[in-house]
Amino acid sequence: MRDEATRSKPPGMLEMERKYDVELVAVTKRYGSTVAVDCVSLRIPKASYTCLLGPSGCGKTSTLRMIAGHEGISDGDLLINDRNVTDLPPSARGTAMMFQNYALFPHLTCLDNVAFGPKMRGTAKAERHEMASQMLDLVQMADFAGRYPAQLSGGQQQRIALARALIMKPRVLLLDEPLSALDPFLRVKMREELKRLQRELAISFVHVTHAQDEAMALADLMVVMNGGRIVQAGTPRDIFERPTNAFVARFIGGHNVLPVDDGLVAVRADHCRLGPASMSQGLRGRISHIEYQGPHVRVSLAMPSGLEAAALIPDGEFHEHPVAPGEERSLVWQAEKAHGVAA
Amino acid sequence: MAIEPVRSNPIDSRPWTFYVLGALFFAFLAFLYGPMFVIYVLSFQGPEGGVTFPMVGVSLEWFRDIARKGQMANIPPAFGRSMALAALVSMLTVFMSVAGAMAFRRRFPGAGLIFYVVIASLVMPSLLVGFGIGLSFQFLGLQPSLFTSALGAQLTWTLPFGLLAMFAVINRFNRAWEEAATDLGATPFQRLRYVTLPILLPGILGVAISAFTLSYDEYARTTLTIGSHNTLPLEIYALISSATSPTLFAIGTLTTLVSLGLIVLAVTFVWQMDRQRHARRGNEVEAPGDA
Image (cartoon, each protein chain N blue to C red):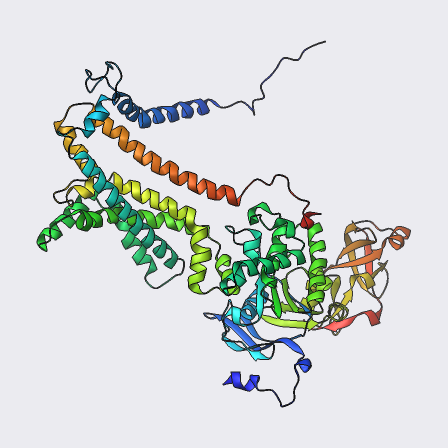
């Protein structure tokens, strides 16, 4: 019944006008009495890069797996390409998933791994190997067609996993922590590549991560989750400039969440400076730690209340007025740089 | 130029317990393989020799004796029966323990109870299990025979063993492989056929070989359930009490070769498969992912 309601489009509506690749409508996941995902609604714009960001156990992976169809939806509806797919199996949804640690089939060569989807559909051998070769070209792994997964490095395995998912011609590619198994250098390189592929293929990527830098670098739409709910969604810049609550401000990093007369404010650490302890304004504390970070020096202050805050000071400025651990200082900021956040 | 005396670092030198435990281990090996080795050597006893040392020459006389008509006449058909039974036991054990181990991947009501009931037959006295089956057949008026009562008696031994072995095999199986197959459009049957079984194959072969050899030399459970035609171990046991010639040793050597050949075959197969999957990473082309 709900199928009918969502499938019927107003007369004259063109495919061009479709605005969303994925829509979650009050999607809920319950395991027994625990609620893993609590009434999440989200619209993922066409051909966009979305990152689901949050600490472990926040429901981001369950949400992704529900979109993929590997996890049943307890309540709510899921639309992909304007079609209600809530009760459809994974392969009928127009999604493809890249698993954490890739889940490449160890007994098949790279070529056969990539050709697996077409093989299940009954595509003839020559044709599916041709398709798979093209996919290997796309991810620059053509030279590795005859290798087995165990013979590849982490980065190479990831490319094979990408090719294996993309051969399904998905409208939405789902990626579960795709970069977490890679070393930091490779991670930055692969994330550029993911973004390039998403742009070139003009499909939507939904990427689950717990790393805020990864989400900021990749996302058109960044969705911060906590406790099974979406706490804030928007462009990375929106969220970084105006986190709406203390959790988001702390989780995305680079912010101090500070108590003021009428509640809490979030101030970016690079908008904070140190003043003399005798100042009447600001928050007084003792310098607990100094960290040189190249362009910046990060100075941590411990307040008498037990609160920790940090100022990110340009290195030139710091070295003109150096401070040392143990000294008392006031943390100050311009009033217009602070904005109130919910607790 | 002063030469420093070579001193052994106390951290690098082995404690005395190493040598004691090492000696114990070699004593154990000698105890394990020594008697078998004696039998293999004595099976090449000269024609004039007896069942003990010294060797009176070296010959293949006793191997020839197996094929001769006489008291050894029952050996070749007994061998055939043992092989046929072991093959069937092995197939049934593989089929049921793979299916069972896959079922136990999910928690289901009564899983714990069923598991213990299945495993319990491992600790039951084997002679009593055989006796019970023999008695039941008699009570039901059925004739005990190779592929009924003896097959059942052997399965009470190989099935729990196979199930436990399959648990260990399936423990290393990553469920994401199955999810990936589903994601790529495989039906449940395709998933089993093209992903689950091929990945489990080395472990399944191991279970098959174990079940085969367990059946091939089973004695206690089989002896009371076999009916009128003996398997090889039963036949040999009967001969031990009557015959006194090195022919017995020759039979021992041959049956060992059969078991060994089977194991070598299986290990080679698994090793080949493994080598293919993990072939050396020599002459690697510059990897784009590693640039």
